Image 1: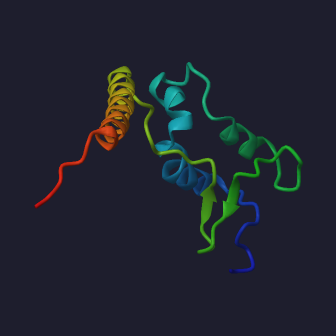
Image 2: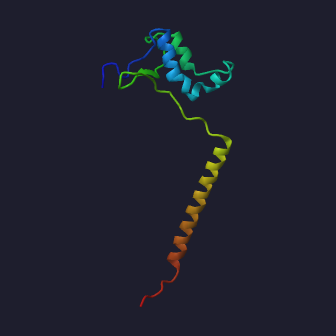
Image 3: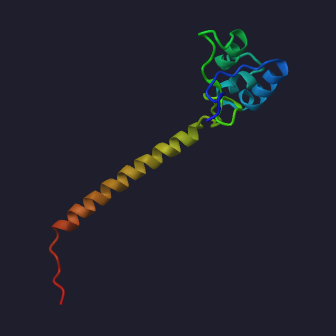
Length: 121
């Protein structure tokens, strides 16, 4: 592990901040509502705290660190979009089907075990 891995990261200037935000914040689900609402909805508080506090301040976001490759990163990054209502219903249906199938398998095994065995000749 390098000397700076795990240490706080703070952009050194506006260009570095823009690069970081385009690489991380611009693709993160935690700030999607803000981006898609033209700034009307609240965004990720990490962005505001990154700009408002210095790395030595206790309020500075601990999620902004250098990774093992000495690259700036955000450990709170989430690139998975939330599930749609249709996806949630499908997953609930699949879970219900799986539990029903498991129940039938258990019943079948119990039932079969109690049946008389045929003799083989």
